[in-house]
Length: 268
Ligand SMILES: Nc1ncnc2c1ncn2[C@@H]1O[C@H](COP(=O)(O)OP(=O)(O)OP(=O)(O)O)[C@@H](O)[C@H]1O
Image 1 (cartoon, rainbow, N blue to C red):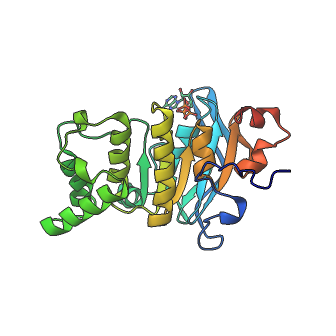
Image 2: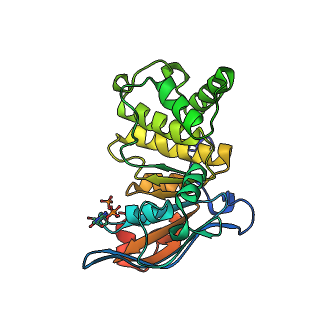
């Protein structure tokens, strides 16, 4: 056999291997949901949800459209209240929090909904200063500039500081939306379909950014997605939702080989 046969170069992929898990401080739980039920009228959406999020981990939730993934996230931040069961964040039951406690909770838990919601009439700088002023009560201009510049560097858009949202592409708007959530340094991040509506290359960039942000800010995250590349890139652990319950849990590599056809169907 020819000795100088070339070894094919493997494309470099930022995908976590089983031994590269970034799960942080042991098994400290930052979110604990037990036997949670939530319906609307006669429609039962969440039948029996059990979910834990460990400090420092990226948990991906997979499920069909309309299966109640967003409803779960809304219970976690107190935008909806469960009918039964427990929903604890940092050890405290969310449904029992008053408005002051909920406000405090939402400074520690950042959420990025599909729309990414930027204020269209404000520049990127003003969009980013807004949470620093409103949430962190920062008023010193040098401190504000530092915060805005740092987060823009992190999402790779330092040059966009004086642009208006209408001048940005969909992918750039997602990045700025992410920057706006990250600027107050939340301990938990909830991503609702972060790559929806983006082309495959931009989707991949956003997924890689989520992974980088986990490492940089040491956040614990729940990532709801249909995008299997996003799951592969970001997940330490994956949960699969079917008919209002989680039916499978494991790493990407484990679930890809699941015995359940329903679970495997996401990987095709
Ligand atoms: N406030 C509400 N009032 C009534 N029904 C609701 C409410 N919020 C959600 N639903 C219903 O609950 C179901 C689950 O919604 P949810 O948005 O959680 O789905 P999802 O799993 O996130 O789906 P998708 O992937 O399409 O976003 C849907 O049938 C939706 O119509």
